[in-house]
Length: 265
Image 1 (cartoon, one colour):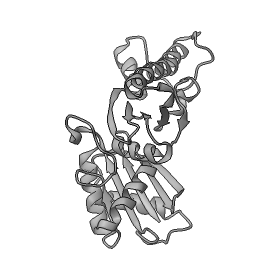
Image 2 (cartoon, helix red, strand yellow):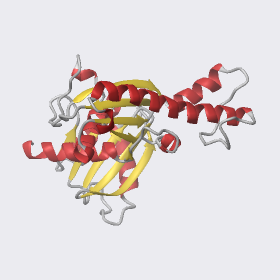
Image 3 (cartoon, one colour):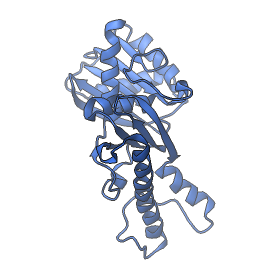
Image 4 (cartoon, helix red, strand yellow):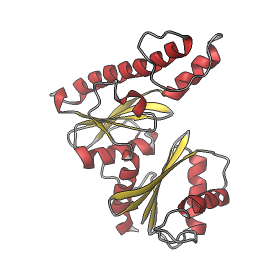
C-alpha cells in the first residue's frame, strides 16, 4: 500500500492507497514541534488500527509520498522515512521531483508544493483548463491551462483565519462555530457572523473564479472548477462557480507523483 501525507499549516491529512483506491484516511493537527520519533509513534498508532496493515511500523507499506508547506515538519518526516521506513521507496515533493506539470511562474520555487500537487491531480482527473479552489488555512485559487500547465493563482485569507480575526479585533465579537445560519439575514450576532463567513466566502469564490476564467480560456465555460480542502463543505452549496468536489485531490496528486518518480529511484 501507498502512504500519502499532505502537511498543511493547520492540519495534516494522511491517506492510504490500495492501487488507485483510497482505503483509509486520517486528519491530525500540524505541530511543527513534533520530532521524528513522535511522528513515528503517531503513525504507528493510526495505522496499527487498520486491518490490512501489520502490527509493526511499516508492515504493509510499500511506498510513501509526502508534500509539506511547513519546512520543519518536512525535515522531521524525512528523518522518519530514513529511520523507520528505510527499505520503503519515499518521494518527498521538492525541487527536482518530476510532476509532469510545467510551472509558468516568475519564480517556480515560490509555489507551495500542495498547489502543484493539486494541479497534477486536476489535470489527471478533469483535464485543462481548470481552477482548483483549496479551502485551507488560506483559500487558494490555482489556474491550470488547457495544456496542463500551472498558470498561476490567487491567495486569500482562509475561513478560519477570518473567523479568528473577527473574534480578536471585534470588541463585541467572539470566535464562533463554523456553521450555516438559518438565513442570510442574521437574527443574532452569531448568525450574522456565520452569514458573513459562509455567504461572503461563497461570493468571493464566484467573483474570483469568474475573473480567472476570462484570463484562463477563450471560452470560460470550458474551465472546470474543482473544490478541495477541509473547509470546502462550508461553501459548496452556496458557490455557484464550483463544478466538482474532490476532498482527496492532494492525496491523489501525491499518488500520481509517486508513480512518476518511483521508477527513477
